Image 1 (cartoon, rainbow, N blue to C red):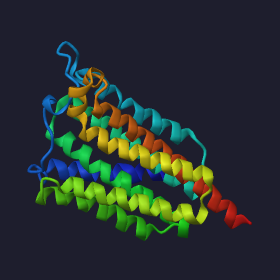
Image 2 (tube, rainbow, N blue to C red; image 1 turned 60 degrees about the horizontal axis):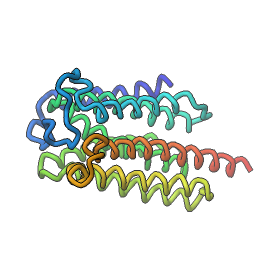
Image 3 (cartoon, one colour; image 1 turned 180 degrees about the vertical axis):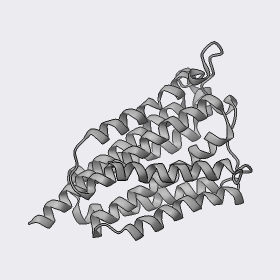
Length: 252
């Protein structure tokens, strides 16, 4: 547990330090409540100004605590702990972005997303071929550096994120073919569908609010974050299932 905590704390601290240096001050990020379909409530404190978009971040915290408390033996436990701690770090970061509408948390909100997705192929690599610290380091560093694309183009972050998602799905399919069963396939399918919901609902945030009144409160952005929590959860289920199946196959 301590090793996983130091791992996540180191990379989070590195991101915060770099972001605070001003390197990403020119990155295009959405600042201001006008970018969200949910209307702010003026008499609520800043941390709850958009109640649904704020409170949905509790989902990441609950998810992280749940998976930290679940038992997974061996090296697989380390991968699970890192992934869970990433969820625990991401939730407050996004909540801070919603509450302050500040540039620093907005940049970190985007940046943290990339290594979270990158952890999936790292875990898949462990399942397929064992633990390789060098591979994990290369993927994580490449993931963090890919945020530099946001400096070169206004859609640079979206391009980096798309590559991360594609890489995660391809690696997931790869280990599913080798070690998977129907249950793991169902988890993988649910994770991919949740990811699609995460992307599409966020893009349609304002359009949905224009079409249906309920989305002016339970907005597309809120629903996309629900999907994000679900894709996190189903990814845990998928990867833990395959970790167990690979271990069973190796012990025969």
